[in-house]
Image (cartoon, rainbow, N blue to C red; front, side, top):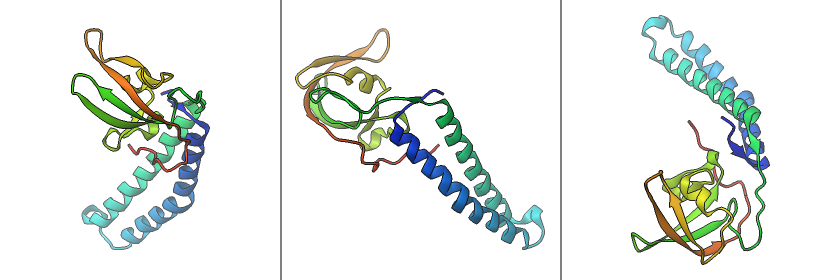
Length: 167
């Protein structure tokens, strides 16, 4: 995996793991026990649903622990006039003649539907370190790409409000 994560990402993952182990796991085990008491397990939908929820929780815990173990820790600091993690930018897309606003985040927080783009995506990696007014080529493949112009940069810090993505 080797995702690039900040120390704050690791902290949020550890908090989620703790919550899942102490709260969700206990609730899931209780739900399985209660559903099992209803009788015939082969036709007991509640039992199968409770087992599925329990297994999904355990899978999420293992996934987060593996991400933490294999993560490459990166800094979220950048120069005052350069684009870095957690900064909000307005980008002018020349081909579309449109301006769009994005916030640059780590992979585990990326959600393009909410304007959160990963620093490892083609767009995110292309604009990292650039300044307002720069014209940047975003390479999509060996044969295609597009140009954008950075119109505005708003320096922000990680306030922890961006949720970690679930899989």
